[in-house]
Length: 151
Image (spheres, rainbow, N blue to C red):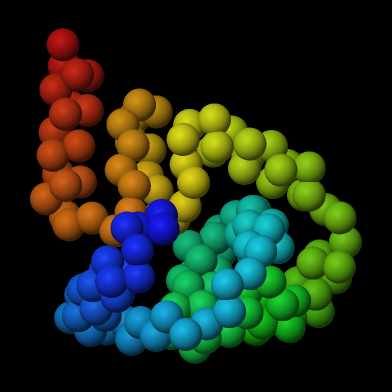
């Protein structure tokens, strides 16, 4: 319902599959929808060693292309390992409660900014771009931010 019903979702998925193919991404949309909290924790932890972007890419690949459950610790360990992190350390981290409160606070702050899904970008702490957008949309937002900064 968030996207306007089943027919609209089908249209959006077909569009995303076409855009993905053009960019080397094989979107599937047959994966398990699950809680992403542990994924967020892993991403925060990976930031400490500058592996955040690679971990995000691997989690996206697991979910969007390989239909894997990204709430499953074993799948997250695989993503981390592919991103260059140690699997034993990753598993120990995910079994701990490390960064739980930090991630809860980050999620609350995101909700306060009106974020309710991904992707979502906040540019210049003021302008929000939600959903997959064309590059022209980002260029327009960047130009707006630059214009405001020059005033």
